[in-house]
Amino acid sequence: MRPYATRLVHAAIIALGGMAGYVLFGPFSLFAQSDNTPPKLSNITIESVTATSATITWETDEDSDSLINSGWDKNYGIFRDPNPDKKFHRIIMTNLDASTVYQLRVVSADAFGNQALSGNYSITTKGIVNVKDLDKIPKNEQAIVERAVQAIQQIKSVEGLKTVADTLGETARRVLEAPVIIGTPKIDEVGPDYAVISWATDQESSSVIRYARDADYHAGDDNPFTTETGNDPNERTKDHTVRVEGLSPGTLYRFRVESEGELGLRGISRESSFTTKAELPTISSFRIVKVEADSATLAWRTNIPAAGAVEYKNMGTREVKSAGTPIFATTQVVKIAGLRLGNRYQAMVKAENVVGDKVTSSPLFFTTVKDTSPPVISKVTNDSTLYPTADAKVQTIVTWATDEPAYCEFNFREGLNPNDEPTSLGVEKEPRTSHVQVIVEFLPSTVYQFWVSCKDPSGNQAKSDNFVLFTPDKEKSIIDIILENFQGAFGWVKNIGK
Image 1 (cartoon, rainbow, N blue to C red):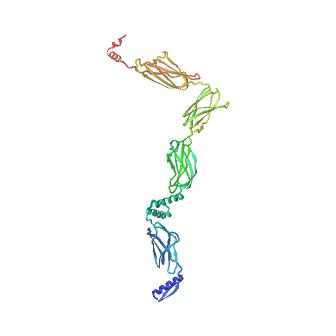
Image 2 (cartoon, rainbow, N blue to C red):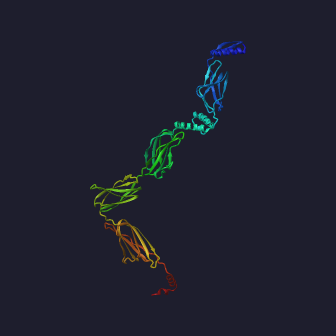
Image 3 (cartoon, rainbow, N blue to C red):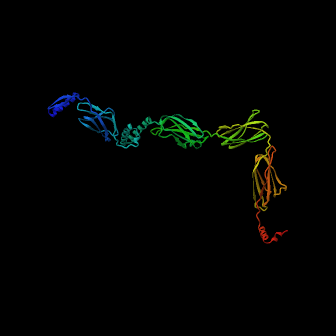
């Protein structure tokens, strides 16, 4: 059979649907076998993708033709090599659009028309323009963005660019909306040095709080806040919670919250405020300093400056009163007056911080008794100064303390003879615990003894030890110096004037 006749027979067989195979006996072709098995596809490879072309290769387990269905979507077009005579297939897709996603599948049919189809593949042709941060754009939008940038770069007229800008602005307003902060941020918890604030947004976004102490708040500025804190900027959520640390106790803070979406658009809340709790005082060393017939003195300490009062109750009459001071201090001493002799009392301290938070101590009990303890005299000091005047005056200052208010009297004598009559400077007119006496009667270069005696309001008396002081020497004149020199050389000089 001539070659063209063989080809005719072959074509006829294909036209019959590939239902039977054939073998050649000499010059004739006879139907001898059937083939209903399509080729097996393997090693499908996409390579050499450019802006306008792509090369696809694959293999089959028998001779077959080569065909690619391709398109922008799954409505495929065709690239074909119709000859069913190869097991290795290579199709170059040409005249493609740049920056475009193409869907494709490969197809091969053998000489009997048995057809094999691959699954779906996709390629993106390369762009012909450089787009900043293209890798940050979702892959299914990268090609669109590239084509859009390419088209915009070809616009040269002001009118055309303005139209594009207006269209982009309108699209951004409709599509690229900033996160919306829903309602008012909620202050979940406030402590002395922290606050927990939460809010919600209509889209996933970051969590930031800007804040400032009221004293540092710059009203009218674009950013009136001094500090910013928040969660990891890459952490985006619709339910936001931020803990603000390092705040000052008992302080008013102003703040607002901000949430930034994936595309950098930011939602901003209205300004709000909160006040941190003041640190609570801790009462320690609460004690009874002294109990008298009609009064009692109590003292305590606190870890922070606090105002304090003593609340006391007569355990017999159940009458409750209080005494204290509005002064903020860490050490407090309060004297309760007007008590009844021989009665039992309960006392508690109530300490208050600057914002009015109060704490109460455990109770103490005491019974008023007649005061039989004399005041204790301590911290006795003296300092003398010689004034270089014609009469060389000496001024001496003596100070001392008593453990309770007392009337004290300063006494002194010249020399060390205990039989000499002492001199008194009189009794103090008011009882006090800190005492000072200024003496101007002392002579230069002289030894003095002095002591103090004190009496409390109950009449109990105490006397200090005797103290000795030496007043400063008077400066010598030139005549005194000459006489001393002569006296050293001639003993008779000391008799001059006698």
